Image 1: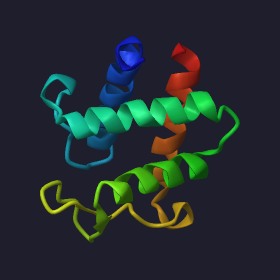
Image 2: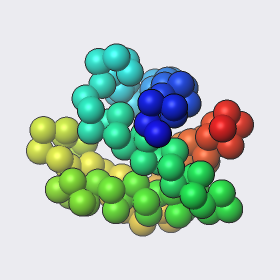
Image 3: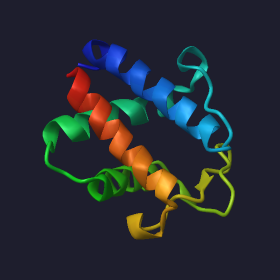
Length: 114
């Protein structure tokens, strides 16, 4: 299934990468250089949208947080992939607006392309 979703995953990854840069955040690596856990996260987000087409951005964020926590990530004021800390491991309502919109972006891309 992941192989079939790779074109969509690549578009989502590129969009999130561009969105981050446009909002002054550190860029994600290119898809071809992204670690497997990052690619797997994208596939999981795609599958969530496909399985839950009426879910809102808040539900998408909860799915993302559950995924991260299952991988051993915890809240930290700075994102650190090696230490597995992330500042966005907070309730959706506490996210900056641009982060909330990022969850909408993922859903919109999946719905447009699948």
